[in-house]
Amino acid sequence: MPKFLVKTQRGLEDVAASILEEEFDVETRVRPGGYLGLVIVEGDVGKEDLEGVPEVERAVPVEAECDADPEEIAETAADLVVGRIPEDATFAVRTIRRGDHDFTSIDVNVVVGDAVREATGASVDLDEPDYLVWVEILDDVAYVSVLPGEEEWRKLPAGKPEADPLLAKTALAQIPYLGPPKAAFSMGERIGRAVQGYELKAYYVSPYEPVNAVELFHFLRGLREGAVSRLKVQRESYGREVRRTELVVYDLYQLIRMKRRKALLIGTDPKGDPFPEVREELGQALADADEVVVLAGSRVGLPRGVLRSCDIVLDLCPGVTFATEHVVPSVVTALVDAYLSAGGDGCRGRSGGSR
Image (cartoon, rainbow, N blue to C red; front, top):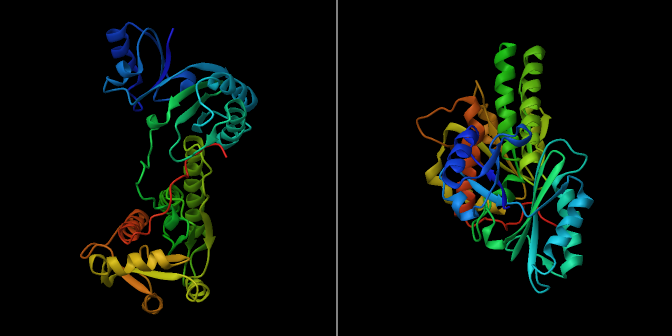
């Protein structure tokens, strides 16, 4: 009997299951293992039928299942691909792992990729494979499928430029947000999630004058907790190696002295040049730079002497002063826009796959 792992928006599992049971007379299991957004469906129904229901995001056919052990998954996948993936074809392995394990999605990709290569003689293509060996792990069970390559659910379709080459060389230095412990912690947590979410090279907490140690402590505690929580989500869902954003405390003036000769320094201030007017110049500078350091204030702006040391000073949104928690997404969005407009896009291929 056909079996599918159906994915829905979180909170719509019961609704989707009820509709599928009514329309297709199938059996469903909602939130297997307690994981939101998942429904296991068994019955005489096809993938196209399931994905015709708006509440269904994706329907992944389950062609084999085994224990959630990389070696067992590799053996299962090798048996599954024989006669299905020709020797002159290409393939990639995609693994989505849920639960606590002593291995990562990348570990599974590598082991399964080697097994599939030995079983078929096919070669690996992480960008545009002819076939996908799809692995979904839920705690101690692994579901395995072989799918056509064109059915990959890409975040980066073929030909779409990628911002990661810029993000990998970009650091943000910001004056710390200080205040009552609860407020400082909360702000640090939000900023931590943001900088790790973009996988920036580094985030510098950069005071330029003596600060209250207790307030700084709570800000740093929140910063770390936010970054760690986001990193955990990324590692569980991306199926690839995630770059960890380095968190550093560095005096603002000393940071300027260290970076001014080897990095592109960009200041953000309402007194700077309006972004639309320098977008082209900025984009080219970002593409040419080996390292980018963006400087930003929080409750207070950047000192005038620091702004004079910058290569470019930007007013990201003339007439608007951003809240501290909005600095990271605003800065990154503007830089990526300028970078991609200047043709500074990198190659794809960061999604998880066998190597």
